[in-house]
Image 1 (cartoon, rainbow, N blue to C red):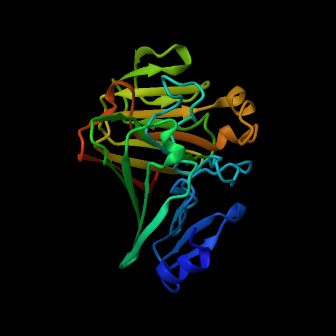
Image 2 (spheres, helix red, strand yellow; image 1 turned 90 degrees about the horizontal axis):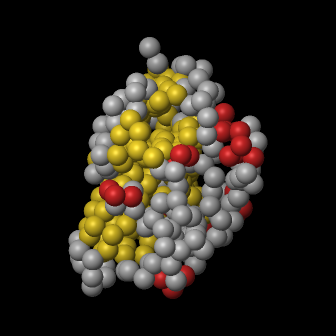
Image 3 (tube, one colour; image 1 turned 90 degrees about the vertical axis):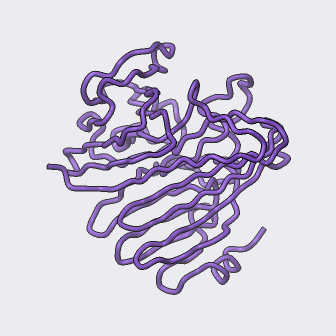
Amino acid sequence: MTSVGELNERFGISGVVQIVAGQGGLAMVRVMTEATTAEIYLHGAQVTSFKPAEAEEVLFLSTQSRFEDGKAIRGGIPICFPWFRGKADDAKAPAHGVVRTKEWELTGIARDGDAVTVTLATENDEAGRRWWPQEFRVEYRVRVGNELALALTVVNTGGSGMRFEEALHTYHRVGDAERVRVAGLDGTAYLDNMDGNREKRQTGDLKFTAQTDNAYLDTTEALEVVDPVLGRRIRTEKRNSRTTVVWNPWREGAKALSDLGDDEWRQMACAEASNIMAYAVELGAGEKHTVTAVLSVANSQ
C-alpha cells in the first residue's frame, strides 16, 4: 500500500492540493483553492466536505462516523455499487455494495484554473468476488470548483453481461430537516420503502414529516434542496440517472444507527442521483456506463 507521504509527493500541488492522513489515519485528498475547499477520502472514494468560497459546508458528516477499514463513513457522498440497500439475493452481503468500504487507488490530480479534478479507481478483488462474481473497473472523477461535478464510470471487464445498481448517496447539510423541501419531483411516481415499496405519486415539493425512504422512478430532472434556515438552495443536475432517492432516518431511524447522533437527522437530507431497482444498468462485456451529478449552491429567494 502506498503511503500518504508517497502519494503527496506524486500527486500533491503546492498550496492547492495535499494528500494527508485524515480521521482514523485514512488517506485523504484536501483541495484548497480561491473558489472552494473539499476533502476526498481514498476510503470509498468518498467526498466528505465541499465548501465553496463564502458559503457554508454543503455536505453533512456525522460526528459519530467511523473512519476504519471495512466500515462505511456516515455522511458526505458514499458510492453505492453494484447494489443499493441490501443485496436482493443475499441478506448477509454488505449494504450498498462492495466499493464504499475499501480503499480506492488515486490515479490522477489535475488543476484547471480554480478547479481541481481528482481521479480514483477500483476493480473487483478477491473479497468483492465473494459477493459479486462479475469483473468490473470503476473510475470516479471529482471536479472541485464553484460546483462539485461527479462522474462515475463503470466498465464491464468480464466476458458476460452484468446488471447493477448505483447511487451517489449525497448527504446534504441542512439547517433543520423539518423545514426543508425537495423541489423537482412533482408528479413523479415513487416507491415508498417505508410502506412496503408501494407505488405512490409525489404532489408538489417533498417535505420531511416522518422517516422517509423514497425511490423516484424514471426521473432525469434536476432537483433542489431548499433550505430556509440556511437561506440557500442546493441544486443537483444529473445525467444518465433514471431514479432519484430521497432519505431521512428521522428520530427512530437515527437512534437505530450507531454511527449517527440521535439528533443529527435534523442536519441532513439525502437526495441523490441513482439507477436502482427496475432502472438498474445493464452492460454487455466490454461496455461502459457513466452517471454524473453536478452540485451547486445558490442563495434562496
